[in-house]
Amino acid sequence: MQSPAASPAALHAASVAAACRQIETASTPPSLAELAAQAGLSPHHFHRVFKAITGVTPKVYASAQRAAALRTVLSATQTRITDAMLDAGFNTNSRFYAQADAMLGMKPTQYRDGGRAARIEFALAQCALGALLVARSGRGVCAIALGDAPEPLLHELQDRFPHAELVGGDAAFEQLVAQVVGFIEAPNLGLDLPLDIRGTAFQQRVWDALRKIPAGQTVSYAQLAQHIGMPSASRAVARACAANTLAVAIPCHRVVRSDGALSGYRWGVERKRALLQREAKPQGEAR
Image 1 (cartoon, helix red, strand yellow):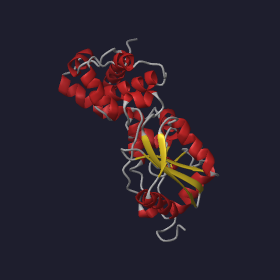
Image 2: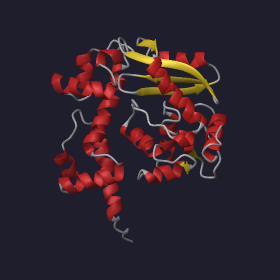
Image 3: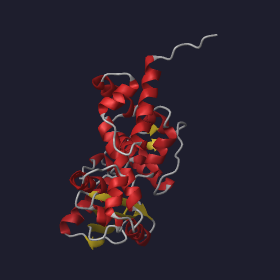
């Protein structure tokens, strides 16, 4: 018996999956025309299909793969920058240095050396959920962490950037920290901060979707996966939530299991419960 023909949606999904694999394994990013030809579509049509399925353009997806490859190669502290450049698919120094700083949040040599010469402001405080650490790079807030005591939070920041210059925040930075504390106390006030968000293209799609969930509402991992157009990626969505380093600013606490139960949270399930309880209260009653 002849199997039924695949639907256009299934064919498009398969073509995009094949294009993603090609981008991930190519030594240099394939052109839009090459990807479209492989899919049997016009460049314009393929570009539209790719973005509809993945949420990003082929160019953005390729850039995220390059960034991930660059971070992996530079994690070996003895790596030469030229070798890292070639391994990440850059053929010219000018293009590499033009893009690497934005990909890494710092110069490639700084990233390789654990953030050497990078300046990161931080402050420790107490809030209703315990100890709080807020850190900011030159691009924006790069860490918001919660815990039982301040020392482990600072040690975690030092582990992420072992050679960075960690400096105590000034009075202006203390006001920023006060905003975070105020948001935790009264989440309906909202929190609008410049963020230094670093992650893969998929992670950033998940985190962007998280920031659109209103305070007081929750979604399941499956619903979030459907929202970003990848209904079979619930586990990957959960991993992206777990990789978030910006507590409350990227509200991964608003994601629950399909049965409504609370699952793991980087900063503790009880804190997740407390945040949701505060958000469920009318404005002015969260304290």
